[in-house]
Length: 332
Image 1: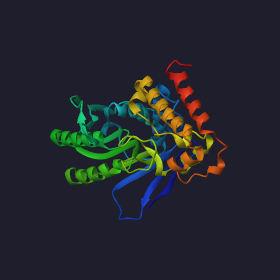
Image 2 (image 1 turned 30 degrees about the vertical axis):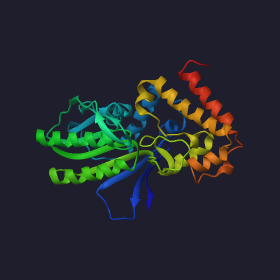
Image 3 (image 1 turned 135 degrees about the horizontal axis):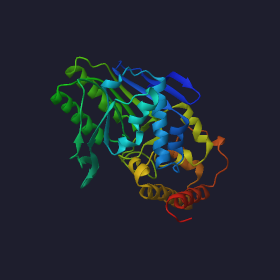
Image 4 (image 1 turned 90 degrees about the vertical axis):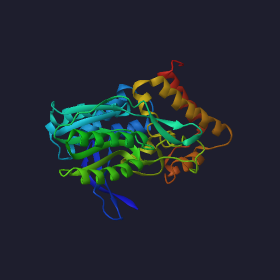
């Protein structure tokens, strides 16, 4: 079982390290909790620049309060397009440290389900790369990770490029709304870097609010997108995030803690349709007898149902649908 060890506490940020009872790993796994990233998970109305500004602010606060041991002239922000752009890491480093000489690189990698097998994925749209490394390089990245298909492809490309350019990697710092696949991938990357680069020091995976779970065909949920959703269901979450669920009965019922990160930032109508469609499906459940208490127990087992006001699930669904359609789909 993994547990959380508190590292940092300020009025606007809490940092925890994930501690494992199994054999120690070189990988450092951190969960960060802040009002802005909790709001992103809980409130789907936060979209567009409100969403990306919030992410950038929290990443900046993490840099400000935790020493990753990186230097300006050696740091490269790598963006796997387009999800990495949500995190604003180039600007977050500047805001935290006053840097302006750190570098930025880009590569494209879009995942797509295999035809005929909905649980398998492949990479497409991967033709663009602009990757440059100084002689010694610390890499800062961010992405949303469910299956890790795009991340694994991107990291392999980065390491092969570093070898080809003859540079030495020193650190990987990765920010994510994500699941356990992120640390599984980075555990392998850490080993590869220690074998290939004599200057290699540390690998950090920084989860925002929790290490969420990703559903598969066996996950017992009435509504789910396998290989895509990041669930509260049996996740390892910051105490502050768990407590925040009691602020509104809709929060613990959301289908995904982030929904589609790209459309949430850059094409809001698609994102709003996704969120509204979930609540329409949930409304159908309510009309067929599902109660708020039943759905709460399904989607976030362990929460105290008695701390919520008496809630009509159908009315809650109609409220959520109306808010998304009024704000983003011009139907109000």
